Length: 514
Image (cartoon, rainbow, N blue to C red; front, side):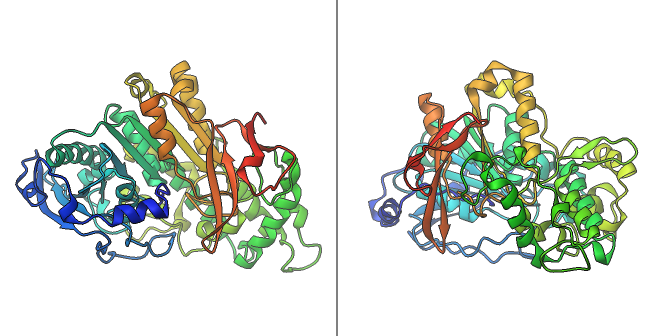
């Protein structure tokens, strides 16, 4: 749910939204009749027509998500058949899914959408985007309700459901429902998701390579156990003493210092760090000379900032657990170190590793707990297998993207996985996988860089027509108005200014080698 499709224009959305039930073509089955559909280990609990613009999401259960992207406008969602089902592949499973089927204008394809954090909710906003673009779509709560990991305590089968089983089971059932309603299977099947949805994307490619023809994995949390170690460790270090904490009011100041050092390294001063890997910003350069001021960092605060940029390591061995964040991410650091706990990461240790709801982030022991967490999870929640050969062998295409200014999941983790796939698979990976690193974009969206884009047209054209994407145009918006466009380039290319014209127009840039 942390990734929003931007495919449909206002005009096309309005046209789709004008569909009424009377104009719908005949289907192989009526919407209501899908409640009698027989599916293994599943029960269709509801099937109802939803009029154009009439969908209202149910109230969210539990606390709000860590990142709130604001209200969603469902007024332009066209009429669809809304199917709800409960899946029980084990006696302890309680997986909820929804499948939305456009009653008119179906493009013949199916798109599943991923979740975020601990999931626990159906991704309605992403489903709405998919239906607006003509896709039949589905989403799952991954087997529990609410955005915490408390479901895992005493329920090992629910952990497996969350880790990978719910996504696969949803896929099988959704495809069957699509075929029953339209009288024919979808011509192509796609997955799109960011964060946990990106991890789910890579999980599908690794564990169930024939489920999808094309996959989009945004900012994937695919090394989940080590990611959560990293997040807890950084939070713990930042809170080691009161004087080590960086006040949120200083984040913008650190960001400006990083931009001052690194913005122009790509030959263009535009408020973005195009390639942070060539930036060597050291927060010690803004260390206070005397006392503590708003325009500088104290010595303990410098060390905290350095820990955010540097990889997390096991102290006794020096082994890298997870990469650090990149220069340019500073304005989002409140999500990493500002809370009372380490976001969703603490729940991995509370409910999966130590099985103690009272465990807190101050108790992490890097020398002992990393190996323990890896052992107890047993690889269920990680999606780091680099052998995507079976996925590519059946024609599968993979697009990965990640914002360089991501404040939660280090971009370096995605680069590490991308390189591991290239090394393991070789030529097929070079042909069938593309990575887009996005300057100035934070976690899944937001930030100063071009963060409004739609990868699905590029993926579908590639999957169905064979043309690999050479660029994807993205936009930046301020208060809903586009004020900059840029091409996103397949890694390792970057967007280079042609030398003339506005630096805020994509047409004046070309994708080229660094």
